[in-house]
Image 1 (cartoon, rainbow, N blue to C red):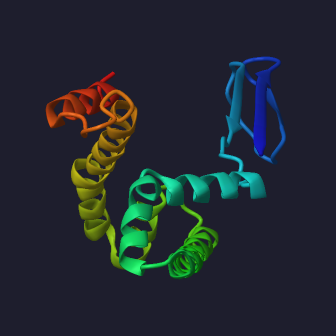
Image 2: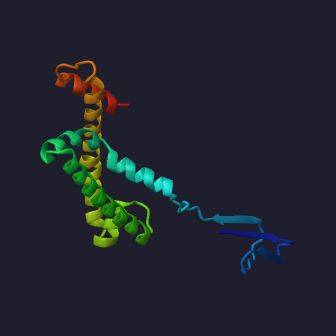
Image 3: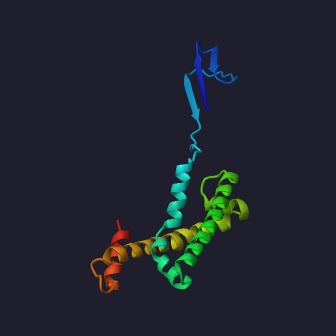
Length: 175
């Protein structure tokens, strides 16, 4: 995808052009123009896809929710059925997201999809809400979950103090 054009002159009155395309020039100076298009490689292997989906699905919620699922379901069998149905729903969502990725060939993920479907203003609003609210909230939940699990062995009989959990979570988030 590179186009190279070299122009040179033998005398001020007469000039010649060598080019990869058919163009002529009457300039008396040397010039070299290299135009190269740089693009990201569009390749996602099966391992990459599995890693992304597992990372998104597992997150920190899977470490907190089993207790609630077991309490509400009542038995191990019914809780496994709930987890299996939830897995199928997540798989359908991942397949829809993959189809969007193949249909909209723009970079930007959610922003690009919303921009393509609804226009630039709703896409901007989504991006703003994601950066200001959604992503920081997810990071805070992950940090609080991590802090609870790290401090639990130190305080086995009673839960860790909330101030210590908050401080540990804040240390996890800060650079």
